[in-house]
Image 1 (cartoon, rainbow, N blue to C red):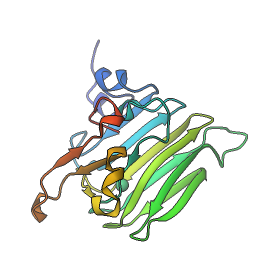
Image 2: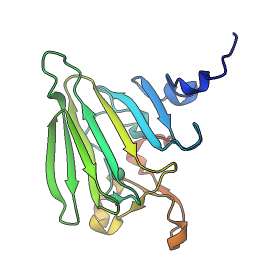
Image 3: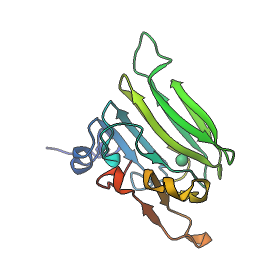
Image 4: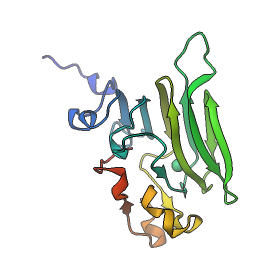
Length: 188
Ligand SMILES: [Zn+2]
């Protein structure tokens, strides 16, 4: 197959190995390695089966634990019914701030997460119709600081916690992957 000079700027899918672990199409995982100056983005479908990283039988079993990022993030949930564009067709739970204010997302929604803002646990409760998640992180590499102490230790076995990009504050990169989440994968 001939390659064009700019083919690498047309992203349509992820490595076969990553896609093989996910039950629905993953359009792209981009970051600073994709092209110079590119920030971190994830664009993927979510359906009735949990995507690979969670490895569980049903949604609702595993959470992404509370955390913060160094840079603002947009966490976009998009419904896919053109007749009802605001209907997410799914139920997603998100806790916001140090107060853990509970929100249930059932509409197409952009969740705006300021820098250093505590958010989570986040989990998908149910999916009636596949929807699309788009994350927009305003930095070329992933930064994430797990806020384990916001959750009682007895619930940690249902939480994914990630530390990344905080080495300058003395926090070593770490990936806490609860056994209940099934086989670990690089991406969520
Ligand atoms: Zn986040």
